[in-house]
Image 1 (cartoon, rainbow, N blue to C red):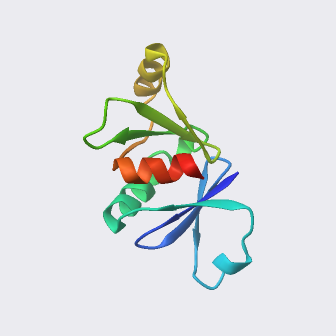
Image 2: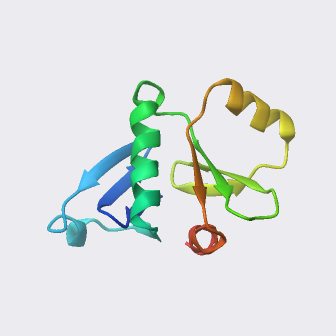
Length: 112
């Protein structure tokens, strides 16, 4: 499922790609989950995708600011908690993009 990230702009995450959208286009896009983030977080997500443009199939790691240490992986519009430390180590070795979100933003993603 696609993910629409809003806050400081609107971008669609689909198939590991980040697609910028204008406000005029958003009403015509159907079947996505919405993630509302602060403008600075939205900027960081865009920067993470730009850094990994050559490796856009790789997932994005999501860290929880002041959280319990759980690390999540966002890939293909799905959010899942990483429970295997070797997976996290492998993703770090690949220099996977990462973003730090608040617990509320993570909860919003999990509800979608």
